Image (cartoon, rainbow, N blue to C red; front, side, top):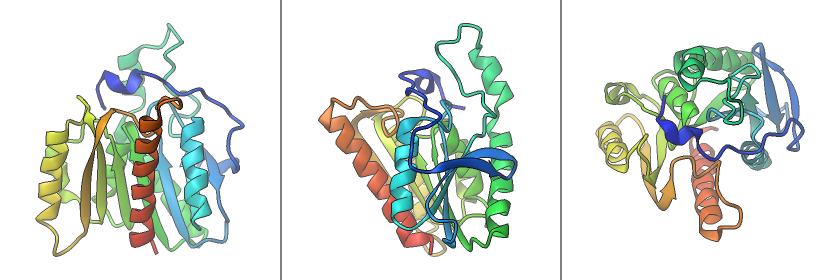
Length: 240
């Protein structure tokens, strides 16, 4: 789990935002965008503020427009972290929603997609979700991974990554410092004979910048859009 940066500047939640629909998938309430007939699927795994975040659903809609079936499961079962709830304890919330459980739930969702006829799957994770995607990238369950401003990923897990993986980080980030992400990139680059990898650090932005940016800040908006375009390009390249 990442440090306190994840708990700053939460998005405004909306249960109705987005062009897709909400239905059950793998036992979880899931926002679904795109055509059910696509054989290519992308699983988006949220930060701690949950699957209803408008910016996350906007990303899902954009990726779906490129021809993917996009699913955004509610890994928190209706209990995203809420900064406005004084009764919600940060450490208790973390313990109740460990990334190991997120990984197990993600596998269940992926199995359900396979049962629907999906043949190739990518996964992208933001902060908390980035840690989950790092775990998925150590398996054959997905074909491409994108990790965006992740929480704390143990360095000894990185050599176990076995599928094409892109890491998009922020210049100002105590949870996943640029130097650490660059080390991760060096580890992955050493495996270039067996997999593709990509690490990019975005200047002038902080942790969570792809989801929680100031819409009045043109630089912040452009940085988020550039990162999400990199994510989409990665999926187009590796999920086919």
